[in-house]
Image 1 (cartoon, rainbow, N blue to C red):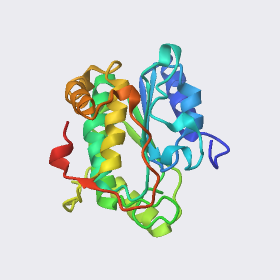
Image 2 (image 1 turned 180 degrees about the horizontal axis):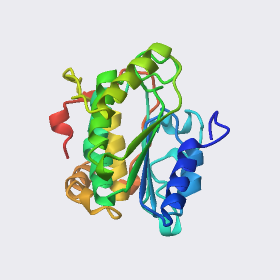
Image 3 (image 1 turned 120 degrees about the vertical axis):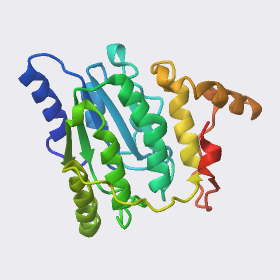
Image 4 (image 1 turned 180 degrees about the vertical axis):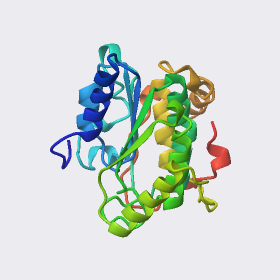
Length: 258
């Protein structure tokens, strides 16, 4: 929903399925900073569409201010497991956080799903310099994310422009994505900062609810469970992240591979 009159990506998914004459498998990857609550509700009971959203949640205080955006919303009925929310609880998410989410969650689940078509809700309000998103994803990182997605569905990948509130950030990021779609090698990606602790927690939370739906995540599950038990709680007992404005600790990426 958000600021949209028509859900272009949802319409495209259904049009493609109708064009083929049966429900081909469609991956909708939504990297807009806002949760795609409309897309989620359209497909939440449909196993032919895998919806993955990476967005700011801030424990429900970030627009659209709904619990629908939390990691516990996994789809309903036949669509259970086919709705994957990766909710960030805080700002300053950058290349390290997005690349890690792709390597740990987006790509493993997508490869297991084996889509026939990939549609990207390509909002660039998580880009570095966007005044609303408060995140730090570089154009080079967007190129690498696009390059990874091209390994799916025989390269049938469509990027649909959505949000973004800094014209320079939008144009530079989309230019990088377009070059990648046209076959250019992704540019050099600068060494990333260590992973934000809340991002590592968010990724762990997603694994905790989705490992029963996706076998590709089960290698991560035992170690995560042990780590949580060492803290005296199970996954189901994990507290919400603090929204205090204090600087957030970072963890080295090598330590977060659990």
